[in-house]
Amino acid sequence: MAVPKQKKSRARVKTRRGTQGIRTKKAEICPKCKSLKLPHAVCKVCGTYNGREVLDLEKRKKRKEKKMKQEQEEEKES
Image 1: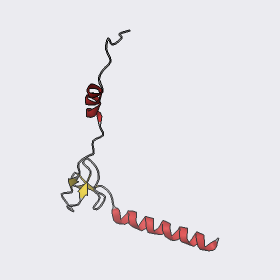
Image 2 (image 1 turned 30 degrees about the vertical axis):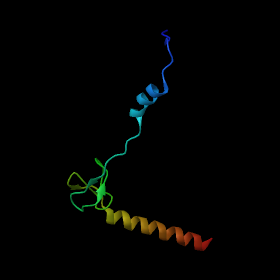
Image 3 (image 1 turned 120 degrees about the vertical axis):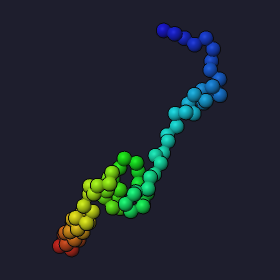
Image 4 (image 1 turned 90 degrees about the vertical axis):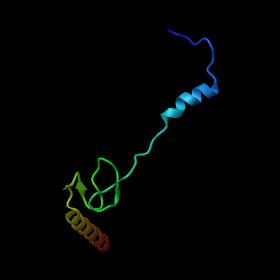
């Protein structure tokens, strides 16, 4: 197994490790609703991806409200 002849300096080690940092994804503007969204992801405001409507947000909102109402009723009963 290879063994290094000399110790690497702190500067050399930090220079090498400096390129391994975490990079954030840049947000894009949704072409339909003009809100910010992540690239290659469905827009959370209008539910479109690549120019097509993928999510029916109104249906999801109604389902969520129904679930919240049921939970509130269960809390009142107990």
